[in-house]
Length: 386
Image (tube, rainbow, N blue to C red):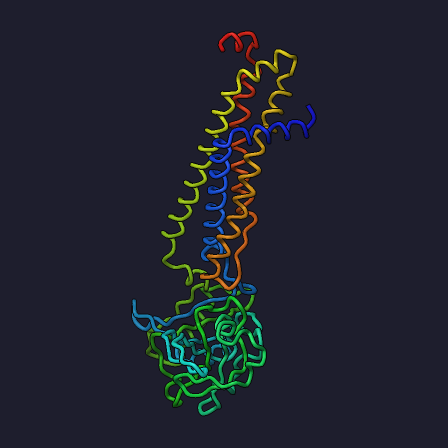
């Protein structure tokens, strides 16, 4: 029988069995949608490398002054590392995460972060609009400037490009807007201002609440960078027992999420396994119910291969419909979740394809087994048993 006739016959059978069609398609759609969405979010949030150029060169550094007591390095120390250490290509210090009152003509309570110069350069990013902070912006007494977070720029200013030069008031005072941070970079922060001290002595103080990032030169290991920084710390203070603890940005970002990753991964696997069992069981039961039809086809001269091919083509309709519905559901769900977690929508075609292939193979196997066994049974015996 031609392919088109088999497909048309399979579609008519699917329509004539609305309960089976509904259960099979919904099971497939939910399994593909839930598995793909969940793993795409896990992958985008926790598994992928940080989304910056050469992420293996990005590191976080803390100073262990005494065993177990970690503090952020002083701003003066960090600036010295960039010029004194050949292992370090770029440095960035940021501080502040607490909400502050912002006045844009209307009062907002939003997060403000303080960045040292060159932070965007360290990440390998360019401003979405305007410019980033320079060393002049961080000098004591320099005019205060600010950069807007990408999401805040869209929500408060409607992504207007004439926002540059406008004034925004933060806790430090009125600031001139000079740029907009690119999408996806620190989406929870509304406004960035330069990290600077009120007096020179403050730049020599270490403390908590300060995070320091490094971009290491190509080929430099974390251990080598830590050794070099520790040596410089001891040169500055002969009796110091402090040492630098350097970790990758990815490890620092995902620290503490190991249990979460394993739990969610198990959930994805369980959903997929249950879906495979349910879809397989449905198609297996449907195949068993077609023993008489298959026997009649065999008695009329249909070969085993022809019968099996016909049944598989018949089974492709619920598989195709469920896959399409699941992919559309996964795309919609991922977009909704991304609106809360990301500035861009994470897409993982590989995950969707793996889930769809696993379910399709389980469904194909479940349809093939009864068709193959029934086609090999003596038609007279199969018909007599009815």
